[in-house]
Length: 155
Image (cartoon, one colour):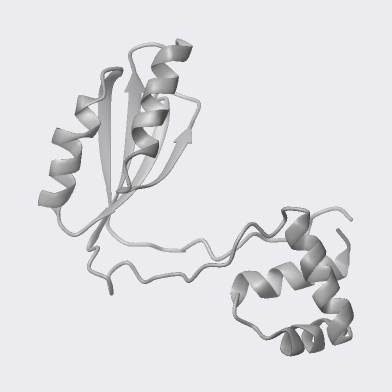
């Protein structure tokens, strides 16, 4: 990945609907050369997909919470069972295996605290290996993820 690839990726992260003509103009390549590079970036897996970013509040998801989860054990069957249960829950936006006091960090957006409570009581707490959960309510988002900083990556 060279400087031009990083520039293309940076622009596509900001606007996935940018026209190929505008993208090629912005990076200083011919239309065909730019298109070829984008296709290579896609086939190499650097671009995994294109999607629209939605405003959570505009679609009715008023609260965002982070949940720290501790499992009863680190045995492979417990980990696999937990991860499969989480993958089946569409309400879970992200789930990360983490180091530290807790085992996982989960991000959820919900319409209300009552909706979150239903997820907490009826689904998360019912996963057999879960022994402790700690909910952290996000009061506001200071900075949303808008893409990776590609400036300092090596060539």
